[in-house]
Length: 336
Image (cartoon, rainbow, N blue to C red):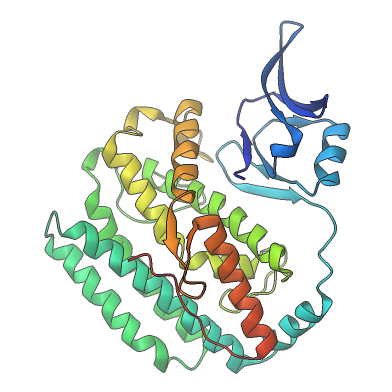
């Protein structure tokens, strides 16, 4: 089931008759904005100033439904979830593999190769209609980077290669957008243009799906192989996310070129938030995101068509198998 999103500011969630209600008080009168059966809620995602009653927290945790807290602009703040899954042998093996530089490097190589391959495929697919030589140059640079991945013997140099290749990718990707979007490069903290706002938001939403997938199979989301282990950063979930980032890139491209979202959906904001996506635009983007998550792809190991949430879980399960079997490497998704 998809998450239940709440973006209305100053709203409050409470439980009544086994239903999750979204309420808003206006001029002393409480209005019920929405109501869904509690059993149909797998996860709640709250944007900005949204309240949650203690009984609602208790009911959600009682049925193992997590709550994700984002800022109004979609930046991750925290997650409320139940007890850790009892997978101690798997987690013990995970921590042992993290202490093996060779295992970590081989896992990271596979993850980076999958990501760069999908980035190259996206540029190739969309450049067929515009035949832009600068995009073709970016495609060639990605191909060159892919050939260099197996030769990297240190994580630091692999990260450097991935960073340079991704910069080349965005130099081509930005060519698909008209000048009205003011999209010249990938930037964040804060995003300086509408396209970067959507990219950051999409990566955040997909990152929560990746974190849930890692936790589902019993792994520790904070112990990654490609991303450095940093306090309070779900490095393994970010590892898993890497090859799925072009899914978000494709979604953002579609939203901006199809008319699903327009420049008018964004407005200027304060220095810490210079570009603001309006609530109606946010609703449309979330709807498009969920439609994309329902898209089905043949998983390379299972050999079955699964939606993207299931694919992320299967990729997390692949990581768990490789950790338990001490078999580093990676089989990437075949989006292209």
